[in-house]
Length: 392
Image (cartoon, rainbow, N blue to C red; front, side):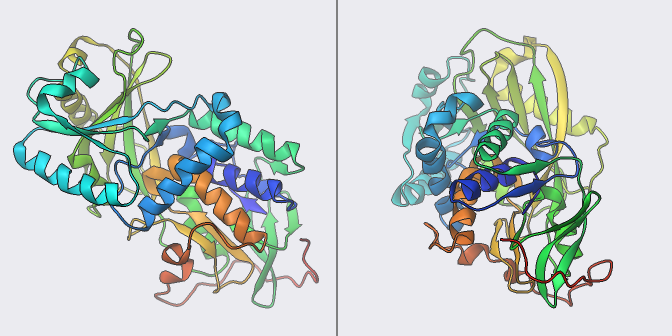
């Protein structure tokens, strides 16, 4: 049983079905209607510092590129590469230090002198001091990825139940044996919480604390420009620091990339304001001005629309992946923050391996749910029901 039909839940459903498990996906809204519908579709290694998340990103890159290669065209996979730029000599030095550590972990990266940057991006500002090019960075269309991963899962026998909200858990003693939904009770041998930004609320229904919180971000979308006006994902070096920050206040760092349709996507902002969907004019203004500083020609380009979404943020900036010993039978695949699209394939494959009783390709210890064990767990709403033997 997979709770949540975003890109992480869809990937987990596909790989679990591929492993021969019986799979049902429940989604309280429409598939892909949450965070997956509000991202840019980035598959990045460039913004990951050495450690467990970078290891997961590299594993997920291989999964997207190898295990899912035959389907790549269906979700518009584009291996465009990423260009990280610095405006000062100190910024270049810091970037050079980061890339040295990343390269030792298996990241492909090329140092780029300031005079060489416009060979990668002809419209870049001439005031930049240098940068680094990451050929492994890629992009896809996240809504298409969700739709096709679920289609592939259904082709392997999985069921998908949209507009079905989980309101509680079935229990046999302490063990989770299924979910209580607005459409009825659904027994299961294992329940995977892949509810994205709402994963903490789902976990609370099982009586376990999981500090997954929303972190709001905006994206600007320009009118279509001629093909390859902006060739890569381009962002300022300070973006890496913003990703790793735990500051609740508004942070903006310029991230600019083109799409196959010709539109240009401009991010990235981060702020912890709960689920407030109010449009922040200061955030939009900061994104626009910083994007123009990178690409002066954008000053003449019309903005077509903006959108916002909520990244599932964990305090230690690592996702939660694996079985939860505090509620046997409950598993998690959530808390990926802004990297969920890129990490989805690897997460789904690792979870499927573990659910099928196999040794995962990557050690999941760093992502263990029980690392958040402070405080007494709350009780799940409703009375636990003894359902007997769970369905596998």
